[in-house]
Length: 452
Image 1 (cartoon, helix red, strand yellow):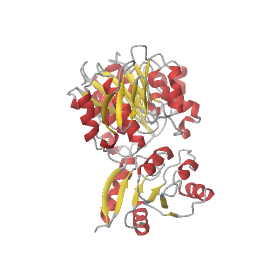
Image 2 (image 1 turned 90 degrees about the vertical axis):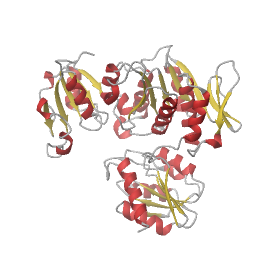
Image 3 (image 1 turned 30 degrees about the horizontal axis):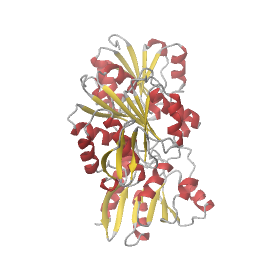
Image 4 (image 1 turned 180 degrees about the vertical axis):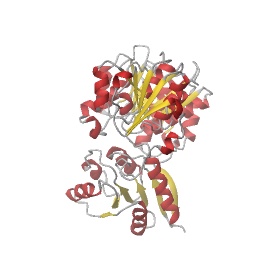
């Protein structure tokens, strides 16, 4: 992609916006930045950019959109903003940071999406490639912008890329050699409006694939499995419930991988996985398919699966105090993710939940309690909504508190020896925290303070 001398507007100065500006400047572009925050609010961020060569548009929408050749969107930016719609109507090139990274990168892309499990699966796949001594960059929605590694990667590099529906909305030519859609359940409906729109965004991950590429789908998730009919690529399946003719599945007590018309090969025992829960078994199966079909040796795949401890903020053991275990699942940002965390627990639960309302329905969340959740402590914007849903489902053991400190103290007062205190909010963090990571860290700090 030819950038030098082009006038480029970068929209959003978050995790991906800053490295996007840096790369564009290094390529000789004339760069402008827009962010909805005021200049004063951006003070800390602006110190990371060479602002002498950048025009800043802060707080108000850009007025003269026609002066830009290219508009680069950060993932969190809604694509229906008026100035973006105007740019589209004038045929100005509009791409996302992921698309820009893809166009500038020589490496091979492997892309992972799904409503839940993306981060764990991306990190696990990355570890397998690293153990195989491949040049590996673990990027995307996992927290490291793809653009920050795009020009450093050689043609031998593997770009293991977690991609969200927000990022996939703005892809044009993005074409991963191997893509997976781990699962699809309702999420982000405040942004996508309908499930059809949400599924269509996810499906963009394979829209440019051809018969030489691979699409890995979850046979056990109907919305993922049905996408097999919409792709031109080779479909490979994984399942923890059924045997598949080509892919990975559970045979007896073992994870196996199978090529067409061949006998299955054992990877490892299911109980050798260090990451708990059926959802993590599915994540492991997806990782097996992707790395095996990338030519990685079975022994390396097996060794990594048996040693991988998971990612921070996803069913992360924090500590045990007086026989009560504390589990940080701040990454549980929608009801389905939190259902999986609840299902993974083996002992009674005091649950801390609540946060920003993304338009989710919490009835299925309540049905998952199934006698395991003894009490629920609620915080954030959705507290009253979740409490109402709990009452409608005859669950009355609910306390609403003001913040995380109160939630942890309340949960600890209620919990008994042998219980688990589980932070799994079923909601986004943005009503109280800048990210789920900050929320999870605060939970751990509050837990540590109980010992003081």
